[in-house]
Image (cartoon, rainbow, N blue to C red; front, top):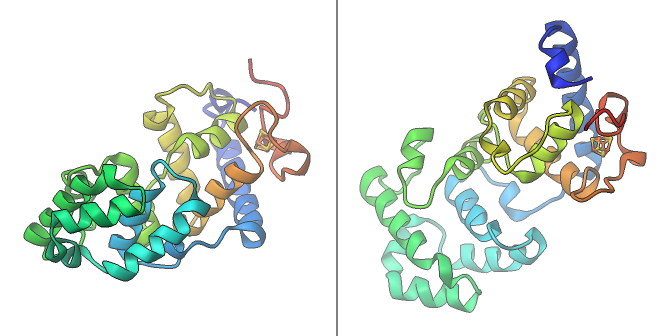
Length: 229
Ligand code: SF4
């Protein structure tokens, strides 16, 4: 059923949101991937992972992330090392393009917040290089707060299920944000979001051939039901 039809029927919408949440959580119990940055409640570590994951696949990031965290365990250690050292460390890890940004961000967190990231979206977004997605990721992944993590992958799954056309601006769309808020309001926003991200990577894949045959959501999916135009 299309999202627009659910607007007429609040109860049906609530039911389908709860079913999606339940199925994704169940799927995640069996299939959620384990990465070192998923097993921490330290906002610094989440932020470092997000910076590294920006242009690189998770499996490639794993090793360089662990090396970096071993050397620089917090924002203070980055400031203490100095910008030139951070540049050369990141250069050797193939991430030199982010060195200046990370250094400026660390200086600001140390100066303004005593080295601890604030648990506030607006304050996070005032830091250099922290946009909407990264702020959500820090709050949701680090602190299990009900903040919607919308990227091209999570948007793809939601768009297909509800028959909503996906565009370049969908990640910033109020419609997608509302659905994601409603999903994470069911609970466990961190595990749900990790599960949804992995589900998008492994089942509801990009391209024209998602793995609908093994998908637990197909009975409620517009894409599967060929309802999408
Ligand atoms: S049925 Fe197919 S398109 Fe729909 S959510 Fe599942 S994998 Fe994605």
